[in-house]
Amino acid sequence: MNLSELAAFLKSRRARVRPRDVGLTAGPRRRVPGLRREEVAQLAGLSADYYTELERGRGAQPSDQTLAALSRALRLSRDERDHLFHLADRRIPPATHGPAAHVEPGLLSLLDRLTTTPAMVITALHETLAQNALAAALVGAHPPVGAPAAAGPTTGFLYRWFTEPSSRDLYPPEDHPHHSAVFVSDLRAVAARHGRDAGIAGLVARLRRSSEEFSALWDTGDVGVRRADHKRIVHPTLGVIEVDCHSLFSEDGHQRLLWFTAPPGSQGAARLELLSVVGRQDMSAAGEERAV
Image (cartoon, rainbow, N blue to C red; front, side, top):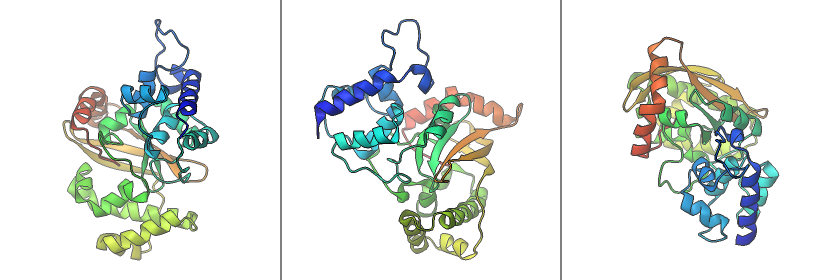
């Protein structure tokens, strides 16, 4: 690993990003046009000390997940992301799946501008790639504090929905059958569009072995792209929050921008407004990931 070159590259990319590019206010006392080290660390979900060590050419070798988080925080192009991985002597991850997947620039640009509504970018297999602070407050921060680096479709919420019962705590029990059916019919549409994707085929095969519920739903043959949905999300402090979930797809269909709204004047809208105060404190204290 070329630590000095990695450090120099991170510094040069940090100097290029303007605060407004990532939804930050420049402020009158800013001495540099680019981001501060602490800001990059915050955007990437890293400690400021760890990021500072990277820029000094010291510290442990960063994981794939850390490199991907830095790529997003610094708004790297795909070529720049690949170069960062090369400098860290890491294998370039698949472009479409896993926490290290490269977020489509157009979706990431829109996410940066959605500052007053919960929003996040996920893969077609429901792996969270990026989210704003309100989304973290609503459905949980990703990755959770202290989480180990991971990769692959089994890290996504769709897989965990059928294999980890605690993942369903996000929704009221009476809503679980609806979400199960929607997940499976959406996955069938994804599998049809990307039939040669080994990751998708492997996920389907694994879920059929692991979950009788999934297997039964898959055998129905139902198919339908989840473009929008009405959800009741269980927040640990605010209770049940009713929201409408909307989707915007990347051109190749591998990624989606999700955002959550509620009708003006509704109880859901009032509770969404409280997220920036109550929900955010709650989730940072818990340090846990939920999902959508």
